[in-house]
Length: 395
Image (cartoon, rainbow, N blue to C red; front, side, top):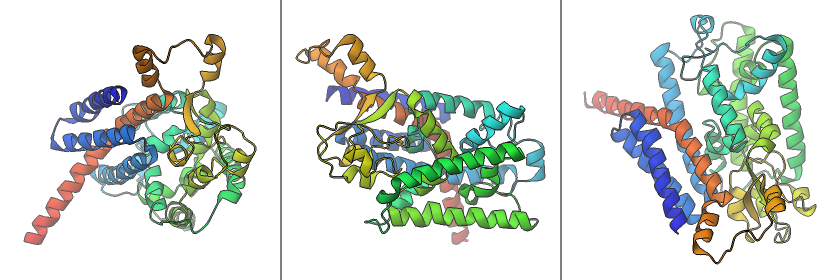
């Protein structure tokens, strides 16, 4: 209890600093800050990680959409990408295209995405710093805790009470397809020195910015990304209760899966406790636990695990936990009897440093930092729009 209270107090400070103090300390920032603190306290005291994480991501996704579209209209007067924006490199640098931008740059020294290097809220340098920090800490946990797009899939996947289409028997094939598609995007981006995913496949153009329809190729591209949005963001998540775009198409997710071993957290499965009930495999939104993961007693999810907490919440045996990636090395070097669990002070620090607690705190902190500016701006625009509508209705 003491540890949970302490972590809640520390999170209150984090929220106050990054959400309230840095963004004006007005009623909107206080409301959003209170909402964030409620989610964290509920998460840490109930132990139900996935439920409150999903609420956070869905709210963040909606408010991000409102804020982003509002900013586009403020700057350009529309969501369309103008020639001037391309010429001046004013396109916000999206984290999804980091993998298909880095490799062409490494090979040709050419920046293929028309974004500013610095001096913009989504400049290349700032986004790369955020990405590197996330990679070393929460790894692919970014997709579950900080990605403003993933909340849309989380929202639609929660609409149906039961799965209409079961993907569990095809989890391995889905992972293979994801990495094959990732390889295709990399090769095409290098060959054409263009962000192929952004130009042709990105489903989020429907809620962010898009190229105007001026010829047949741009018409086809528009049809493709609208179709991908409807199929992979709306329809399939509803039918499968999975994050299908994240699991099959997203190049950033594939890259983070490959880089996740360098992060300091990982999910572990205690095979001695596991009864092979497959509940974890059924609820995993990223297809990171399949039948072979359990039957072959691998002891951890597959490489595409995004640390969302769904498997930990649902496991009846509490066989799935979070651990530090260096825990086995630490045990080997220091042994298992370094601390005395009967000592209250040592027990307090053992509980405080429990990887599940530390991960939740660090992952949610990342979400707070990433979301605060966009979400509070989204709330402000939403309230402003509602008030304007009421005034028009009154007239």
